[in-house]
Length: 95
Image (cartoon, rainbow, N blue to C red):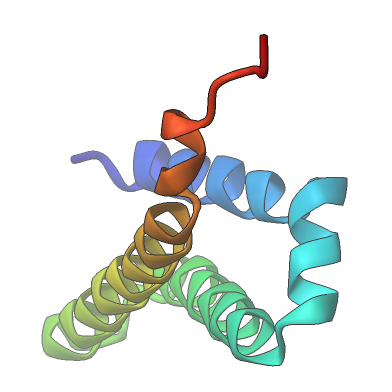
């Protein structure tokens, strides 16, 4: 994947995580908020490292690996919370 495209996708992810509904969730759940802050820091690190042509590839690869893990953590966290709400699909209106 092109680096500019990756950075664009990451910007969209961060923008999505700062929508009002998720901001409210972050305020209520410090653990989720911490994960988002860590993701923001990794994205910033990617942006800084992208412009550094003297940075060894292994350091950049490590940052990309960390970023991938953080996104997976957030995805897992969101999936768990969605599963908690799965009972709602069985609700039916009273006649």
